[in-house]
Length: 225
Image (cartoon, rainbow, N blue to C red; front, side, top):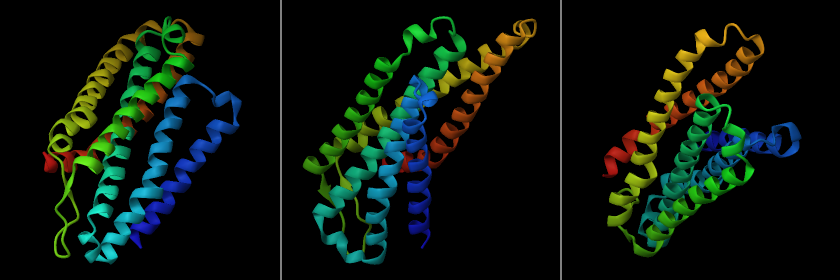
């Protein structure tokens, strides 16, 4: 019941984000395209990962099925990796928006964000393919369904979690320092202050999402290494 409810909330919430960005033209911005990519990844988690988890919870003897274990772990790791990498791309976008506002539009445009999203999805899909073709199922009726892949369990977490996490934390710390310096300088310019406040508000919101996301995933990646 819990997983089913969580799946419905995940699907509906991210579907709302996707429809809003696609439907409203004023939301067609580079930042929102990155958020769209993130929402697609999270939507697929609700559609593909949760149903497998529910099935394995109810019928433990599915753990004998090597194919299902690989597919479930492939979707799980690749989609989570895609979410993390998309969050990393969003943090880069926020860095240029807050720290280099004069050059933001020239450096971060639609083409750049599309490339960033494609690279994120490419790395995530590659990790998923490695799990399917190189993994060895360790699942039994009595044990948890898992797939043992040396590359995915060592190099994978580094490139899909630890490295992006370090980059995001470093970027948001830099944004925080720059935002503090901007507080005194923008008070004289009201219009500039409003723009800066809008960017900082968006950055705080995304930083909060990133913080909660990392808080939830850190125990998992610490366990598999």
